[in-house]
Each structure stands twice: as C-alpha cells, then as structure tokens.
Length: 94
Image (cartoon, rainbow, N blue to C red; front, side, top):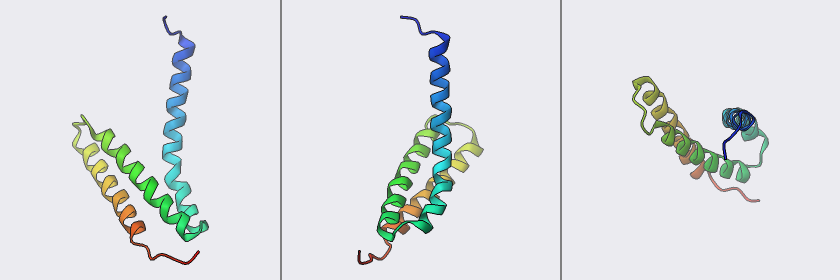
C-alpha cells in the first residue's frame, strides 16, 4: 500500500511537534525546578537528564561534523552533571 502525500504531512507534523516538545522541556524545567517539591524535582531531573543524555548520544551516532560533535558532547556532560547533582541532593522529610 502506497502512502499518500497526506500521510507524509502527518508524519512531518508529528516530527515537528516531537522536536518542539523536546526543545521546550528544558525551558519548562527551569520553572518547575523552583515550583516543584524537592523529591519530585529530584526525580524529574534524574529521569529527564538521563533521557536527554540518551537522546544526545543517539543524535551523535554517525555524525561527522566536528562542531556538532563538540556541542553534543557538552550537552551530554551537562545533562549528566544535572543527573549527578540531583542524585546527591540531600533527602528531605516528606
């Protein structure tokens, strides 16, 4: 069964939406880090930091442009530093 032009447009729109969400989450996390309770904030930073590290690692697979690799490595290091910082936060009473 051949996909029509409408199917391609839906797929492209989904890709654009997924990219927009992926780009918006770090901005939202800046606010949520101040607004959320400490325990929830800790786990959100650990989970999203690992997710973003994984996304960046998969983005670098097969990449040959030096600047893209450099920026990707910096982003991976920063997200892993966020995970490490959140992991070592002192536990607070609920």
